Length: 326
Image 1 (tube, rainbow, N blue to C red):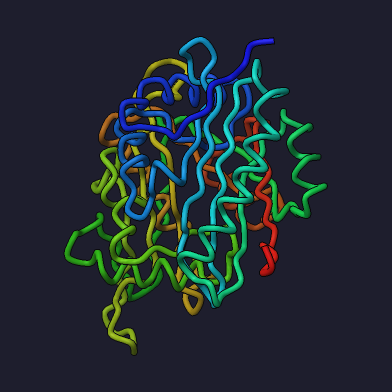
Image 2 (image 1 turned 90 degrees about the horizontal axis):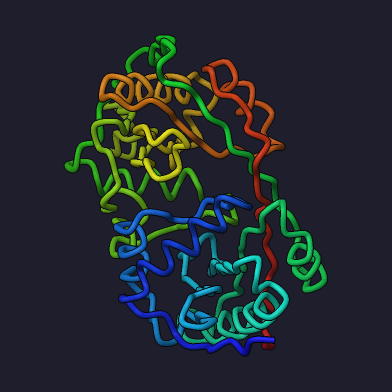
């Protein structure tokens, strides 16, 4: 049996990580970053200490495993820590448990360093085709929050026009509203234990500062008379997603859709998605992809009505409270 060499990740690993992530996404997708610019941004993410927060395994000079702990922000009153465990099928027997144990231990250290007085919630993803790791996580106290499935839409088909609610303006993403969009995002996702709650420093790496971000195909919903003075009531971020299009044609990922709680169930999501798809089609993109929770029947019906089809590929999102005595 080959002995793996373990070490922290380095910025120069971008090409090797792209190869590892791409192979894993082809066999068992969990929504990993695939493009080089995305991976560079990931390794340069504010607050990520490569020497302490990452671990890779090499087999004869080829990276076959990658682990990462990332501070996803606090809200409400809980530090959220994302665990990334990516292992090539050829190395699962050797690397999966080693990475799992290291991630839990590093997460405990991270909580003590960042927010020692707060409880922490760990979150991770596991592909449907990796039952061994799913069992390992379950035995460690993780629970499946939801299953997410990949839906796709052919943008060569016409996009139905969906008007915005009365008094609401839909506009392409405008940098002038960036701070208000951050506030709206954190309000929209406050109750989702698996969501990132970024601060001003980490916000650009979540979407709007990514090199693959498509501002003209992203949408803000504005209500000028909001009592709190923030006109941004909804948002949809779109990313360039060329590398996963099986035909090599320009594709997009609808990455992050959110509506502030007081504006939900008014048709705002339909209007933003329709607007974004129309912009993508006009820009020459041929395919759109998104991920939806399998238990979110309302969202599945919405996406189906807008022409999306289930691919049958998906992953589980799991969480586990980190014991405070670790």
